[in-house]
Image (cartoon, rainbow, N blue to C red; front, side):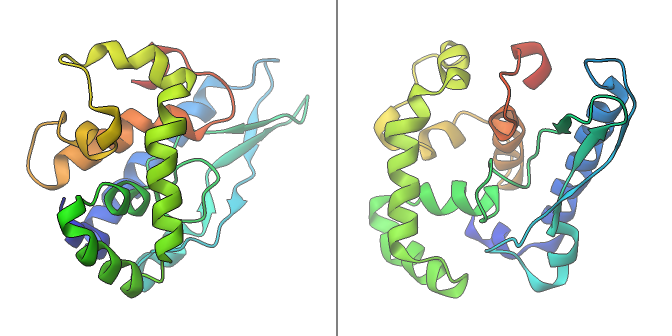
Length: 189
């Protein structure tokens, strides 16, 4: 895993651009009632985030219908659901190999992520993530099957490319998890 990405402002700006595109797609799709979607972003206080890009990560793109007032929150590669930590941090720090645990702990101290939080994330990946509807619908795409006891590292390994590319692809792959409604396979991947 390339933990240096957690300190690479260019990578974070790329994630922001992807989120802007995902938000534009959500907005263009309109509301299910046929109404127009207006900007109604959620404020966020992101953790494990560089100071120089923090302002770009202080809101989650969301929209409100002008007719029925229902919210539509777009998929995101910056955030992993409602977690306050950035999705990249959750993936990278959870994926730390056993032999690299001290390096993950050091990085956790640098980014102010408690060791208990990292352990909780690892538990989510190995115990709860495999039970999600999203994973149940997509796990057959990976042959041979992904080693569930080594998630998310075993999942990152399935995405090809340089150090940044597999993580970006994984975050895009996981983006359907970031919305509250079930996402069809064509919509999310």
